[in-house]
Each structure stands twice: as C-alpha cells, then as structure tokens.
Image (cartoon, rainbow, N blue to C red; front, side, top):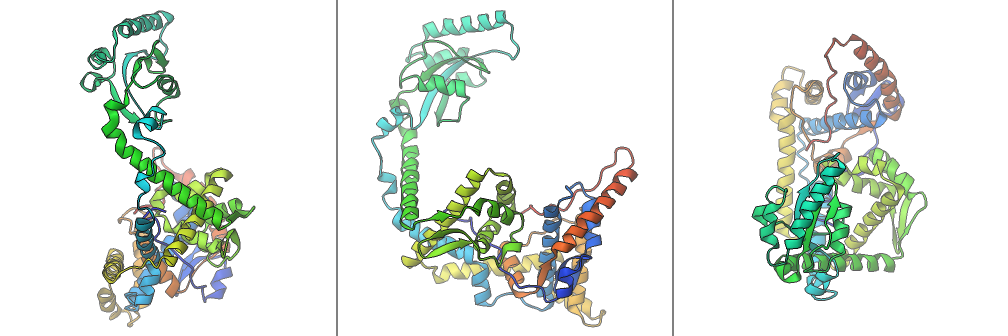
Length: 468
C-alpha cells in the first residue's frame, strides 16, 4: 500500500426531499437547492462532452459538492468538530498508521538478497549496454540497407571492449559520442523487442557478433560487464529486494487470511467505478477473507479515495476482467494491512493529528473563499435578502456554476475530506430518473446547437471535474 493514496468520499445521508428523488425534472438536490434536469441538459448539450449518464452524473456531483460547502458556510459550520475531522481524514490517518507499521515490519527487507549483486546482474535482473547505431530510414531501398549493414560490419570488426566507447563517436545517434554509446541500466520491456533480444543473447562483457537490426537501423552492441555498473546496480538491487520482500509478505498475508474473490466482483467493480455514490450503502461482498469482507460500499470508498487526476475510475471501467480482479485483490490486501497495523497498535500522535486538523480547516476556508461564500460575506449579503443566508449562499453557487460552465471562472476543487464531511452532515441526492431525463433533453439541445453553429464555430467544453 502506498502513502497518499487514500483520501476518500464516504457514505452519506439520503435526501429528505423524497419527492425530488423520484421527480425526473430534478437532476440533483443539496439542502433546499435543486438542480433542474433542464438546466443540466443545457450544460451537457451545449458542451463537447459525450452525451453519457456518467458525464451528467459527474457534473451533478460537482454541483452538489459546491452547494453543500456553501450550506456549511451559511450555517457558520466550519466542520471543526474533532469527530467530524477525524472521520473526514480517515485516509490520511490510515496512511500514517500504515507507514509506521511498514517502517517496522520492513526492517531488513533491503538486505534479503536472493544472491550477490553480480550474480543477479549477470542473470539478467537488469541490463546495461553500449551501442553504436547506423541509422536506416524507413522505406530504405535494398541498396541502402546493404550499405548501412556494410558500414556497421566495418565498425564491428574494429570494436573491442577497450575501444568501444571511442568508436561510439561514429554512431548516428545524437549524443552518442559524449556518452560513449552508453544506454545505462534498463529492465526487460524497456527497449524495442529486437534490441532486447540481441542484448539478452550476449553475456556481460561480450560484443555482438552480427549487427542487430531494428526499426532504427543497425546496432553494434556491447553488453556492459558488472564492474562497469556495480555502483549503479547496487541501489536498484536494494529496491528490488524490497519489492520481492513486500510481494512475499503480502502473498503470505493473503494466503493466511484465505482471501476469496466473488465471481461477480469484476462486473460489480466496474459498475461501482461508474457511480461510487450509488453504492454507498451496498453491503454485498466483492471479496471475503478470514474475519471480514470487502463490501461494495467499502470498495466505493477506496475508489473515491484516488484523486480524479489518477483516472483510476475510467481506467477500471475499460480494463479487462483479469486486471479488475487484480485491482479488487489489491484493495483486499490494503484492508488486511490496515488490520495488521491495528493489531500492532500503530497510532497517530498528537502533533500529526494537529497538523492534519490544521490542513483540513485551511481547506474548508479556502474552498469557501474560492466559491465566494465566506460566512462574513454571506451575512452582509443576507441583510438585504431578508436574512436568509442559505438562500444567498445557494444563489452565489448558482451564479458561480453558470460562469464555470462557460469557462469564465477557474475550476474550484472540493478536496475529498471536505466533500466527505459535508456529504455526511447535510442532505443531498443524485436522482437517477432525473439523469435519464437530462440525457433525453440534452440530445435535443445538442442537435439544435449543431444545426445553428456558424462555420468554424464550436460548442463550449463541459466543466472539467478532474482538475486538481
């Protein structure tokens, strides 16, 4: 489990406005505010975004987050109750606990070598080589190919380990002279297949007996001996030691806990990736293990924990089932490591907690300011609006959102801990029937927009909800 991978959006309250939940004319509600399906259809239809329900949902979720943050400002609720902050920051707290646990359990991992560095290098755990390239253009004639190969053979006949670096001055590769043709250390799969095959066929210290042909041309290759790369290989070997030890540890943890992935897990995981909020109360198991299970709701939290910029959710939707199953299994492993950290009594100290709380408070304040809904400003504006700060806050968000979809104001991100806090505290709903109506209406808007565009014109892009 890697640090800074958690931060999350969690289970939330149902909307109290039950009528809005089934009214197809309403796409979403947040507090007393409503997002009409017609308005969202206009936004989506006039954009360049695909007319898909997932896109409509992401825009609706953004609107909900903005309105809930504004509602907290109108109520003067800075979300600073310690229990609220701890719940909102669970991912950050778990990161700290897991890191402390790992720092202890991983002692000595970098020394658990399955052989000496030289043995591992010589066996192909990593490669290092120098090469001299005689470039061959695409579509070269047979005569040009013959000439290039002949030039390569001429250099090859002169090449020895002692003079190879100086001969690299004759390479057609830019910078080869200065580097002596050195390619540094590289692993399997990092070079084009033809080149890698030629390198693997050589023993350390050997020079290729024939020019190696790739799409770039003809290469004379010298596989560097261990003595030339010992200092560079050492840290790589240690990193590899850690990776092997960690993999072994996690595999044993999985085996001892009898992890079982449910047959329906891959299909449901993809469904959850499309709509994490929709599965916030789903206790069906994606996987089971000794003493527990990974529920759909918990999996949804893990997915929401990844920042939008990571593109985890859309990638998971498109991934083959084999990779989706591996991802589900990795989340189970994360849960098991958290259990181990609990058993080891890995805790967050007072200073660490105070720092997280301070950052959270700053995030709330910054989000208020970015949306223009600071409590003091709302109080001033409410003096001329009958004292209704919630109404003023909602109107300010509507004005901001209208400008946002026109790209007239910068995108404002609601950090996941802040979103989690307001979503747990205040009522909201994303209406599936309303989203269906949005798509229906958006098709008409898009058709009208396309038919009325002037030559060279283009519709505005949808608000980018993946920015950070």
